[in-house]
Length: 238
Image 1 (cartoon, rainbow, N blue to C red):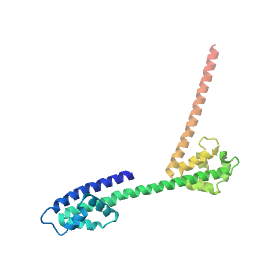
Image 2 (spheres, rainbow, N blue to C red):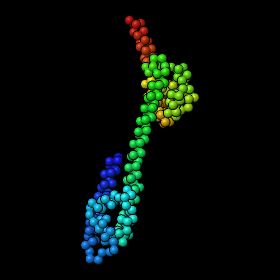
Image 3 (cartoon, helix red, strand yellow):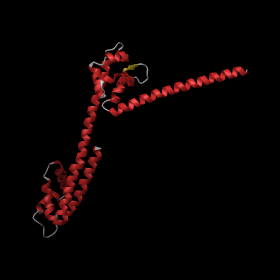
Image 4 (cartoon, rainbow, N blue to C red):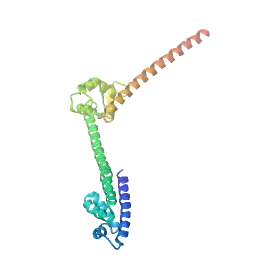
């Protein structure tokens, strides 16, 4: 995004410079030139100078009023208005986009730091268990860890009150094994952090998995019962 912003800004400066340089060059060849002839020649006398001053006008290198005044008195208010539009568009649109790109880059860097913190937090939490990082955490162990700093950081990251620990444990227990591994814990921490909508979606997915398991269990039971009944019918006929 930053690259395209710079490309568009360059094309805008180049196009305006081309027009202004040609316009001023033709104007200075007239016999009766106004009192701002020297300023016009200085600011817009060549393509390179025009591009430089237009760039300086939006970056604080020169007061853009100094560049606009010769255009106003030599070419009229319409040209001054067009130059003002260039300044306004550059400052309010293009440079704001560039600022947004840099801010987004900083936010992504902060997010990476938070992710690394969550990884270390999960590692410290499970290293305190018997078996270390390869161990699993039952509901009883999970409940006993609610007051430890690592668990508090986990609940803070997903923006959930510790009183909902049972629901969160069920959500963490992705495979419904009754225990949470370090991988399940970390995946949930990174997936659910700071976004209530993500948590709602995860809870919905867990409920759908439960319904799916119940459906397949009942379906398999019905199929087994029908096969058994069919086998008995066949046996009686034989």
